[in-house]
Image (cartoon, rainbow, N blue to C red; front, side, top):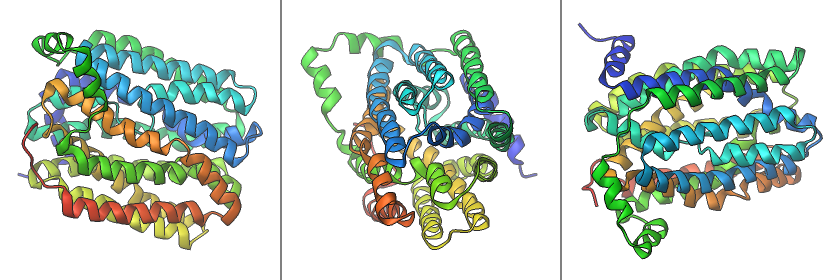
Length: 406
């Protein structure tokens, strides 16, 4: 008898205590941040920010996300995965405090700095990715990552529309306060439940390396990851100029309200959450490259729809394709990178793979805001469409299914 998605989830959760602990961490985070994602950009606009000023806040977040990915990646390979994960969660807690205390849009710069430093805002934290990859057999990495992500996504689905309703009728403060409480719980929970996966001899080897070698490790690009750097460079800038400020663009340019944004976020999360586990299982069984390609095909559909329509029902339907794109991209990307890099260097490599492209993307939200003000809603979306088409070419030609570790 064929296994259902629920059966596969139970099997994957039984593989590792770390996967179970990280799934609970994700569940708690997304219950509250599912509301936050929907409302924070409209709130910054409500505090008096223009679209370029919102882009500045988003740019600060990207700058610190780049620093956070490199910092946590390096420290994770030296100190271990667990302490770095706890520290990144605490940064997200501090970001919530800044959001709660904000009296004008400038105060959200503090939010952007600490949320970016956590390296968990719409990106994968290198310590978390490495810990999950090391907690299961290599043949099950895609499934494990998908289980970890899908549980949080399903939680986000249940609260996204609620967030839009609360913001419209009760105010934003209750959402910000709940996020702080959730991350406070996670800080203690992860500290008690996670088991370290970095072997002690790897830590010792790292600590005995020379300063020159350490600096070279920080700035050098792994030859086996060059195509991944290429698609990340291409994607980070265009995503920053378009999707990272999407909700603000929809409110300012198309007149959408927070309830509509909440419904969009719910359908996006539903698409991502329901498809994540079967996609993870399929890519572990049939290969990962195909799903990277399919992810970008789905992104092409989304961008063409954004450019050609201004109607809410169309944007709603496009969230299904956007969710599928995310469900395919993240576990395939992590699994393909993990199999190319040995454990002792894995977290740093993943950190650099996020950091260097993010450095290029720092001005992207601000420039996206300027493009919107000069040429309208379609302009930043056309930048994103062009980058997705380029990424498709790179994946098809240069990324192979398997590669030997360096």
